[in-house]
Amino acid sequence: MMKRILLLIVLLLYLAQFGHSVKLHTFTDLVYPSMFLVDNEYIYVFDHRSPGNKFYIYDRNDFKLVKALLRKAGKLF
Image (cartoon, rainbow, N blue to C red; front, top):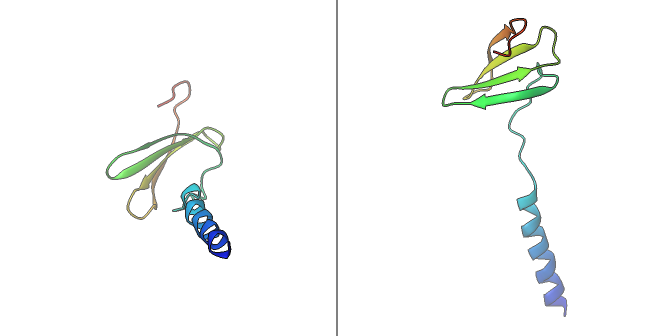
């Protein structure tokens, strides 16, 4: 009986690790990112609630900000 309880606990601990996501990086410039695109070199993020509706470009390797662009009035990109 004790072996079954121990086996059940180990099994539950093993299965619990599959439900957790891993946080890689926090982008402090973003308020409410609404759209993003990832390619081989960069991460492109549009933040519609930031001042000026900024479009951010981050380096995919080290997650550093490459450029922050303002959105042109009336167009999305």
